[in-house]
Image (tube, rainbow, N blue to C red; front, side, top):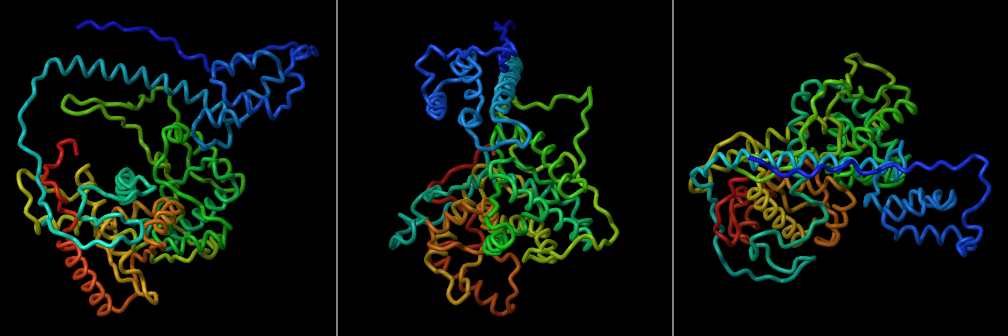
Length: 489
């Protein structure tokens, strides 16, 4: 097999200027631009494409100084994320070269796929599973909140969320899986105290830096952050009390943020160690013979996939905790407790058990692969999002009264709810727009067992009356359309 390959040269991503040190002649001396204020020139330069910026920067030092300003290159990066150690112009140049390298790899992967696929014929496989469809029925709908139709009237989620809960749900489950091997160690009181201290210090760094400076939490800090985020009212009050603003969070990193993550992690280590005099986390080892991690894969039977990680925390190296008690770790400044952290560590296993046990309660047609893992494929996420939409609808219809919360979620609903809470500012905004108030979350409420059972029964009965389905298995039913799941799930 022969393929025509066009050789491409690396992009010219550096501009080198060499004016004599004794230069005094201003290239603008005879130009009308001499009288134009710098602010106006800056505004004009913002509209120039990169090649033109390159050209005008050669005119004179004055133009070059304006062309190098971060205000221009922040727009070119199309991202507000910034490294502590680099200008936006440096970030843009590095990012352009990275994209050039990615395109080369992508072409190589696609060429290999075409070559390999020419030797294979399509095979037959048994059909994917078919989940049941909830009974069709007429629903008396009165618009409430930002709901324009009854949740049972559409196949997919009919409301808009500011958070990409689909991607976030997958990253959240992945995060909790990564933390599982450390749970035994992280349940020790002396270790938890160190984790809380490290989280507090990290949040102090976040609060002291501009919002757009990219700081990277370690896995242990991210886990404590999770406990805090899943208590929205507490999180907001603690942030305002301790940092005078709500520190935002996202589990997802944009393409450029993921590209910058390693350098941002190194910057975070330096800032942390300079301020607190202690190691933040070991830096990654750089070895000459390290293999390059692939960024794209294209299986013979399947679509091209980008396998670049999109999560925002650091998990390539881990901090080593001291097993000895120490008085240098101060009191917990936050409103959550050590017990909250330990209990939150049980959520993934409890969720897995619930999801698996519910499968036996619904008729699933065709082939189904039983697994202990949570199904977060495309079709499963669509059903989970639909259940969460119903949960929000019920929360709008039955708001809390006198501190009493009527609607209690299942573990399936929790998956999307927890994902929504990963971005606290967007979560609060969505709740106000959709529901009319910020829905608080208490993962392990201290309520009398009989009262809790009675309250849950009320929720179950109201749910069944409203949606004609059992709340516990709601996430396993398609809405309206009777379809098979996809094999690429």
